[in-house]
Amino acid sequence: MKDKLIIFDTTLRDGEQSPGASMTRDEKLRIARQLERMRVDVIEAGFAAASNGDFESVRAIAEAIKDSTVCSLARASEADIRRSGEAIAPAVRGRIHTFIATSPIHMEKKLRMTPDQVVEQAVKAIGWARQFTDDVEFSAEDAGRSELDFLVRIFEAVIKAGAKTINVPDTVGYNVPEQFATTLRSLIERVPNADKVVWSVHCHNDLGLAVANSLAAVRAGARQVECTINGLGERAGNASLEEIVMAVRTRADIFPVETGVDTTQIVPASKLVSQITGYPVQPNKAIVGANAFAHESGIHQDGVLKHRETYEIMRAEDVGWGANKLVLGKLSGRNAFRARLVELGIEIESEEHLNHAFARFKELADKKHEIFDEDLTALMRDEAVTPELEHYRLLASRFHSETGETPLAAITLSVGGREKRSEAEGSGPVDAAFKAIESIVASGSELLLYSVNAITTGTDAQGEVTVRLSKAGRVMDGQGADTDIIVASAKAYLNALNKLHAGAARLNPQVGP
Ligand code: KIV
Ligand code: ZN
Image 1 (cartoon, rainbow, N blue to C red):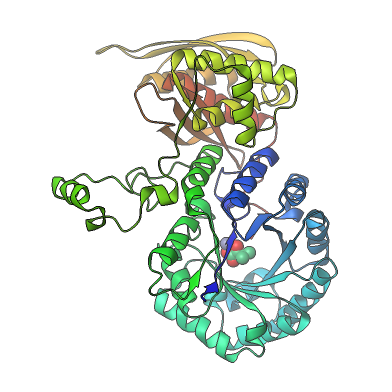
Image 2: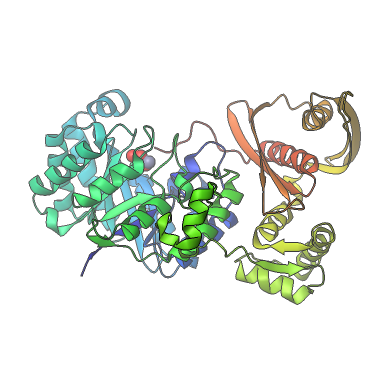
């Protein structure tokens, strides 16, 4: 019998710390449901003390999720821990994950605490957390740059205080595999009662080594890996869940562990997270990139046709490729539409909402005959925009682009209910559209990112655009989808402006770690 490797997903917490990737409560719920479907062991649902919105999201996930443990992050303070305890209270299995920094640089420059004070605070934190749950995890933030003797000391103390999982984060992605494995091995050997707890790792990808470090730690005794879908996360991201899970499964000959993950749910989870956050997946990304199973060279194609395993170490269908099935078409009725939304975990608040969404679906089906799950997700995301989040609305647009001519865009918007129109030229039609919008809105925001992705395959696919705007220190992503990518771009720009306008943006830098 192999040991179980606990998969702790932090897409909704560390993943959300990617710039502009903030998600609404409902979006987080949908991702949490997909993680549960994928049989992830622990879902870190958020950082309950960061804001009321974060608290509500963690609580809603704790109420909805039955099969996975639901966890909230908390600094080692009584107030943070109380908030986390309240947020996870409805969970069938709830965990509090508390952390404090342990590296000399963090203790001295950031916390301004002595090592003795840090140990004392960590022990108190475990005591506070245990008032809410027995499932308490402790993280030594920046463990990757901490002194081994100090880690041994603080881990011994928190285990004595009742921590059940000890997490060793490489917070700044500084470690390399052999050295990180040695650290893990030494800790497990030296910390008293090490065998009474689960050893966990949490690696960042600043040197592109997050997965390699996590896997090296697993070989050294770690039995929980913290990771995210598509490797989303602070800065260069976290270890990606799909790579960890598939490495352990594909190289069962060298890893003494197995996960409980239903790997066929990996690609659907990747697509969902990408659509919701607006972070596209690079085509050559392992496991979930569009080219991950595509063979270009004739020699490879010939080999695969003769015997698949000549060039493939995994089967595309085992990670959920091919699940991109045609779901609905032009002739599909209202009931089929409603049933598919329910299967996708999309909530419909009222008959009026359903009617409106169904009318939009019919318009889309007229333009694009085959409707896939991803199209429905994009459509319903637009539908979820409530009037208070739609100060600016696109009423009409006209674009002119011709060889040798300067591209022109004419845009008509509703601004707080009043119709306004403007025209602008640009270096291309998208540039012209953004300039026309700005000449009406005069937001003064800075465009940080513009990216276009085809939602599905085929030339009639909807283009999904992500626009990242920054204004007065706030960064917000907007998304828009349409079969016309210039319209999709205008919608995405307005979506970001609306979020900035509604003040829904998170403060940047965040409260989080
Ligand atoms: O990177 C980090 O150290 C973290 C901890 C809070 C686990 O995200
Ligand atoms: Zn982290």
